Amino acid sequence: MTALILTVLATSIPLLLAANGELIAERSGVLNLGVEGMMLMGAVAALGMVLYTGNPYTGIIAGALAGMAVSLIFAFFAVTLLTNQVATGLALTIFATGFSGLAGAPLVGKTSESLPRIIIPFLSDLPGVGEILFAQDLLFYLAFLIIAGTSWFLRKTRSGMILRAVGDNHDSAHALGYSVARVRWMAVAFGGLCAGMGGAYIPLVLTPHWSEGMTAGRGWIALALVVFASWMPSRVIIGALIFGGITIMQLAGQARGWAIPSQVLSMLPYLATIIALVLISMRGRSSYLTVPACIGKPFHPGS
Image 1: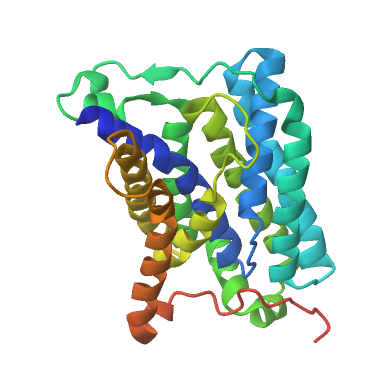
Image 2 (image 1 turned 45 degrees about the vertical axis):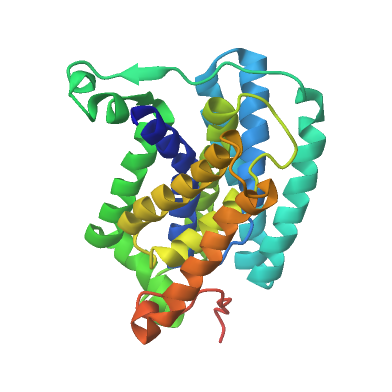
């Protein structure tokens, strides 16, 4: 049972990181559909760096920077040049999918060292939860710290209030003297950093090798998770665990030879995503109260 919980937790971490970053971008009013591409770039950069340096911790930095670099391309077009955010995000994902495949071609067939576990003395010996919560890798701890920090930032800090104001009414925020473009650039960059780390977690912990498209749609699930969580960081944890569990159920079913076509099992995470979105829409008007009012809308300073 402990092994199953550990597997579910590990599978949830990439979703948790990517969804948290996208949540911040969307709370600022920017819809970045390039999460899948940023995760792929983070994955290939992390694996390449670890193979080059032999140090798995450098992979975290490389993955985060690669994700941020791709997000800044998106920010330049969508925030500065005011291009359509949906089209720009989709184009970014297509570009990053192709570019990561090209960059990762020399890495095919190579394996890297995984992130070591950091065992916290005394706490890791606690019965039941010790091994699950206090004997994990650095990115595991970092993911939950980032979620807690994001929740505190949005609810308790002045900067968080400004970011929410920009996402809810960018004209009013601009009239009060806040730089809408700067806030959105920083939010998008943070989203890219988190998505890059989420992508890096896959080769650094889950599958220590490179294969083209190895994120397997996790970026799209992370986008749905933000809606599932109603743009609230604490709910992202619940959603990530649910989708992580469904993903593991798919793998367990295939391993145990369930009399269900493997293609159907592979569809489970995406079917669950669609069902979750339908259920959210059925909750009616209350489910949209936390939606940033300006999400996806370009800001024209002169208007």
